[in-house]
Image (cartoon, rainbow, N blue to C red; front, side):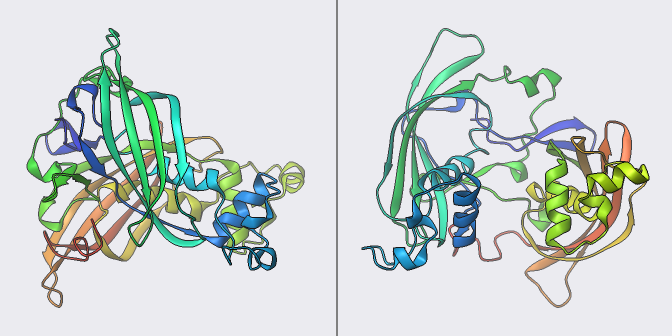
Length: 346
């Protein structure tokens, strides 16, 4: 089973990778997907309004209070999207969803719950295709109390080993145990990992964060508006045309997007202790794609927290070959086996 989360790019340099290949699977294999995600009534309202959903059970609390449910229920398609999105780390290497045989909503979901996904391989079918095989999955959507609230039976095409487009780089998988994507629980179910422990890091190692991310104009404008940024260059196209100012991504949003890219490696963070030397040497235009990498430049035990350590990392982000952001950051990380993970089902 190709259960390792990094490719070896070169000496002391690794690239994040995700997903199982067709050959890794066997019927009965079960996976607990992490992280989980909260849903709120705010999410529910936004989804309803954006789609002009006229089922007022989702957003009219006065009406919902008089139904058998007592409160608004989440939009079913939004709930399904969350459950399907949460499985993407293990099923990253799918080519497409072929069909959904059954989509059952087995219990109500309200806008104040935590949702998580589990999937089971029901069957595998060799299609005689050199690139992909067919996989039958059952996805269970589970709420905070452990009840199954959705069941999704679907078929996907999954790339064979070495046939995914990202495999064409020819980079070898790094099989260090610290890079294992799963741990196997006592019941035999594999649980996805959420980043590296403090002890997994080594000085001068560089992690290429994958996949890259395109930054969209609407995301930048929304972030600026929600932060009370009043400068019209970020949301007034007429102003930019009159002044000749180029349409660019808001700089604090660039910093946020770059930092978010690092969290798949540094997911076991207790806290960010701060940034220094933040540089933004070139603007990012809408629809540009950024990629980021981080190098570990310092490691020390926490004097006041014996279950944690402090890592200092230098991060750079590029659009093509152009440096667009760099900084140094101190991270407080859990030591191996410490933290709330077991209690929280991680």
